[in-house]
Image (cartoon, rainbow, N blue to C red; front, side, top):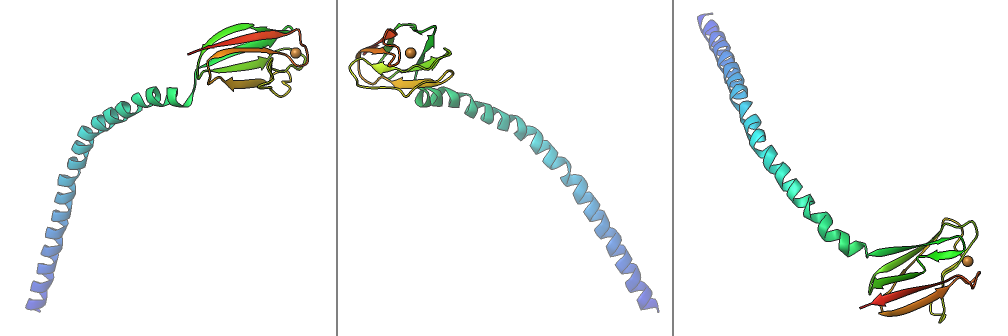
Amino acid sequence: MNTKNLIISIVVILVVVLGFYIIMRKNSEAPMPYSTYGTTTPSVDNSVSNNTTPKPATTTPAIKPVSHNVTIQNMAFSPSSLTIKKGEMVVWTNKDSVPHTVVANDGGSKSSTLNPGQSYAFTFNNAGSFAYHCGIHPSMKGTVVITQ
Ligand SMILES: [Cu+2]
């Protein structure tokens, strides 16, 4: 009986001491992550903003070439004469109520029929002069001058 009581009391003491240990550990560990989170969060934010800020600057010119818009409206190309640089793109958009086309005078390139609201894009990789007209309405004329 005495030894049993001793063993039980020792077990109880061990459990209590273990319980204290666990509570002490939780209390001492809890502030640690908070303090480290507090110090790492601003540095993470800085690296993210530093990484994202230059990204658009470097990717934008690589993906998107410079583009110029020519509006097709009131049976005319506007502007009818456009000067661009080699490698740049021209986008013709039909804002008229009838279909039009963009056809090179020398027959080199030709858009499909542009219905109202449709666009045709062409990138000029060679310097020179590109004279064009509407294949449906030959009186509609335009010129793109491509400089080096
Ligand atoms: Cu036309």
